[in-house]
Image (cartoon, rainbow, N blue to C red; front, side, top):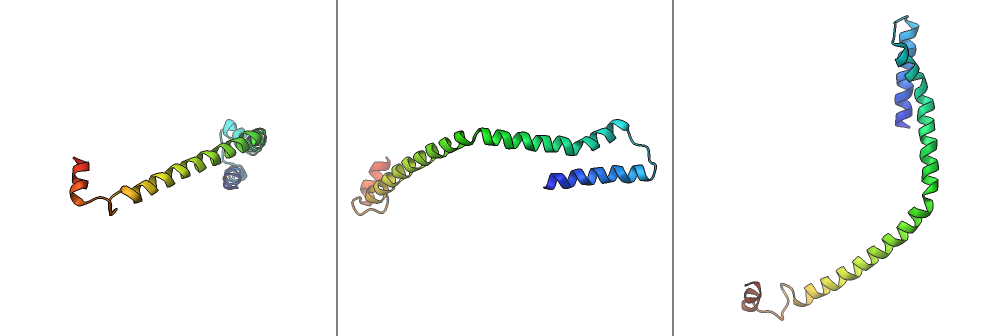
Length: 102
């Protein structure tokens, strides 16, 4: 929507220049006139490409969900290990902790 407004603004600027008989480059005028059509063609192409990759996006979503689930399980295990034997656990004294670091 934002780009459509910019196209409309450019076309309006060229229309005002023409209204006041200000000379503009003919090539620039053609390009401004073609902006709307080019933009619409680009949008159509983008929608078609998006439609073509729907199945790929769906399979990617399934794979991503599995990877995230696996990562969450690994993270839960690591966090449990951290709570069980990490800093602040009662199983390790300060001296033992210093020895572990050395």
